[in-house]
Image (cartoon, rainbow, N blue to C red; front, side, top):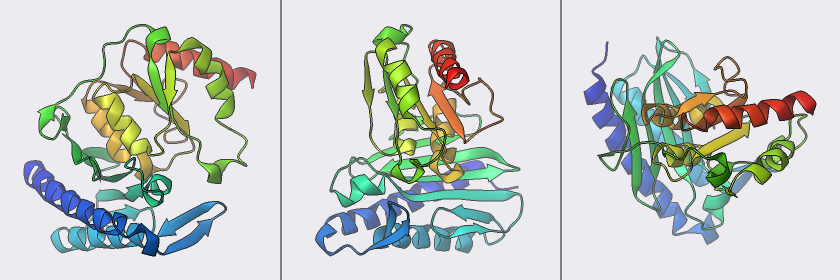
Length: 264
């Protein structure tokens, strides 16, 4: 068994250093090499450089661990697995916007036990460890106490590479928007989940996300008091459907999403 506190220190140092790599490339966006990955999706040399750095660090420290990276895919290993999204919010990144993050989670037997999400442009580090509260730059954070859905600010996402899929998010947006105060769209699911964790958003929902998109952020939100589920209120379908909200408004949001799903 690994030491979680020691591994958390390792993860913290590693993800902060990875953040400096993104800032290097962020200062040279006019020179950034961008490569097509899928329909209306792309990967930059910054994504590749950050993921390569993270994987090398992990392999040096934990050579037997499995790794699941967005750009490199899955490598086999023991019962520990690292889920890596090197730059979550690449579109924001290449447009010079600060709304991107680095997301790294560690699973043991398919359950997340450690997570970190770093927002380099804002110098904000969200962390959580099994059995401990979530933190932002070392200060304990909690979800909001908002109890009125009509006063809620929610976040969601509309990834263009998923636009041809049957389950589009627009129908859910049109259903929820009349019942809440406002909506935000940052472009990084990991960031959105951490914003729920610290109370900046009251809730977040999205469709068709991948494990590396949400593993760290969902764990951090959970450790901060959020309920993380699919639209039915269970975790069986994650990460296909994701609803994350404070425990007071989660039932109301779940009802709206579920009713939309049933009638679509």
